[in-house]
Each structure stands twice: as structure tokens, then as C-alpha cells.
Image 1 (cartoon, chains in turn cyan, green):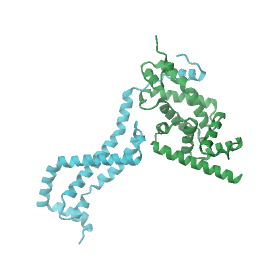
Image 2: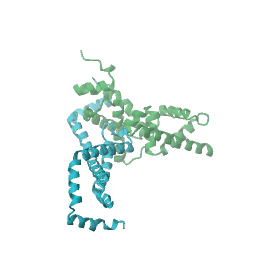
Image 3: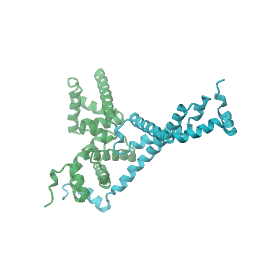
Image 4: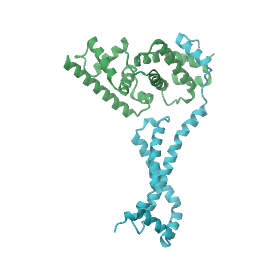
Length: 156
Length: 192
């Protein structure tokens, strides 16, 4: 088509003289996929946390403070950090901006819970065996670790 | 015989552009007048600035044409690029967004007044000027949203796609902007 206005002609000339070419589709596919990476990490961290907590709740330790000790604090902090990164990056995806922060957070938490339940179900047998061994034959090292780190939490 | 692209929708034209780049000229022809008006209303840019801005916008559109998602209106996508380019321009030039409304825009101000049922009180040119002045005192996000809603006549969904925010947020911002405008007009009424 022949340009009908000066502005149009200038624009088309600039595109030609600067040798601008469209970026390939794979570039955008790859870039958009990268936005999902923190989302996947967040979900996995959250799922791991949920599975750990579930185990703690369903297999009560003789000392109730064990549950507090068992909360994987590092995972919880990482989960919160990655959630924030995920939400800000999801906003940059094709349709992520259509959801509110709360909706995105709920989706992230729900995915973690579902995946956490799955993790728990898959590893249940192995966990049961490990914990049976732990309860029956607690090693000196394990007792020392608990005393050293969590004795202040003890309810007398 | 090549197809008559005049009857093509923007979205169909983009698909054609991906096959044959000469169709891009048709898109440029269609959007130069609309975007020129948009830039003029959003800024006090000179005609040289407007030419530069338009050039940058269309270069970005052309470079990223394969990113365009057909589930979105093409106009929303190109306005989003224009919006971002304007923000970059303000930063580069260290300016603040200022609405600069032409004669046509003044009629739209009248429409806004009518919609807000203020016709009886605000119908003179001087008062319209006051409204424009008041519009410029609003926060950037409110100013931008009113411009897109009332001057560019975009729907809530389109505004959401242009600004990349949830449509609920668009509704909230429009309501807040209207309230701020109403308050400013009440103050004007009290003082005059």
C-alpha cells in the first residue's frame, strides 16, 4: 500500500532505514515461559511446606512443641518471598493482570495445598518408616539438637 | 488479485502482516490519526515530539508484532504500547502528564458534565475551562483513566487491557476520579 500521509511515510521509511524486523515468535514464547519459573518454584516450596506440616499434624510427637520445631521456617519465608515475586511477574504475562493480587495469591496457595497433599500421599509410607525409627530409637544427637534449640519453648 | 485490505479488521490485518509485511502500512494509516489525537490530549508535545513518539510507537509495534495476542483487541494492544511510550517520554523529558484538550475534547467535557448531571450549573466556556484545569490537578492514574474512558471512549475491558490492571480496579478508579472531579466542581460552585 502506498502511504497517503507524510507521517505514515516517515514511519515506514524509518522502519526500513533502521532495518527493523519483527522478533521471532519463539522469543516471546521463551520470555513468557520465564515469567512462570518463579511461580513453579513458589508452588513447589509451598507444597513442600504443606506436606511437612500435614505430617506434623497427622503424626503427633509425644512433645507437642515438636510441631513448632518441625515448621520449616526457611521454606515458609522462601514461600512468602517467592509469592511476592511470582505475583509481580504473573502480572506481566498475557492475562495475569486481569486478576487481583488476592486472586493470584489464592491461586498460588491453592496450588501449593493440592500439590502438598499429593507429595504427602506419595511419600507417606517412607515418612512413616522414618518416623517410627525416630520415635523408637531417638539418637543422642537428635535429643541434644532439640534441647539446644527449643528447650525455651517447653511447657512445664 | 490481492485482497482488499480496507475491509479487513485490525486483527485480520495483523495476521496478514505476519505473512506479508507490506500490510503494516494499512495499520499505520489507520492508527496515525487516532494516536496523534491521543498524544496531543495527553501532553503538550510539539509536532516534532509527536512525530518522534509515533515513530517509536510504530517501530515497537512492528518489532513486537509476533507478540500480539489475538484474544485482545488490536487497538488495546497498540494503545498500551502508546501509553508506555508516553510514560518513557515523560521520564526522558522530565515532564508531568498534562491534559491538553482541543475543541472536540471540550465537547466531551460537556458530555462528562451531562453524565454527571451538572449541566445546569456548568454550561459556560469559562466553567468548562475550569473543569479541564481541575482534570489536570487529578493524580496521574485518574487523569489517564478519565482520558481513556471519556475522550478515547474505551470500554472498561479495553482500559483494563491497555493499563494492564483488573477491570474492577478500572471501575474503582473511574468512580474515585469522578468523585474528586465533583468535589472540585462543588468547591468552584461555593466560591463563585
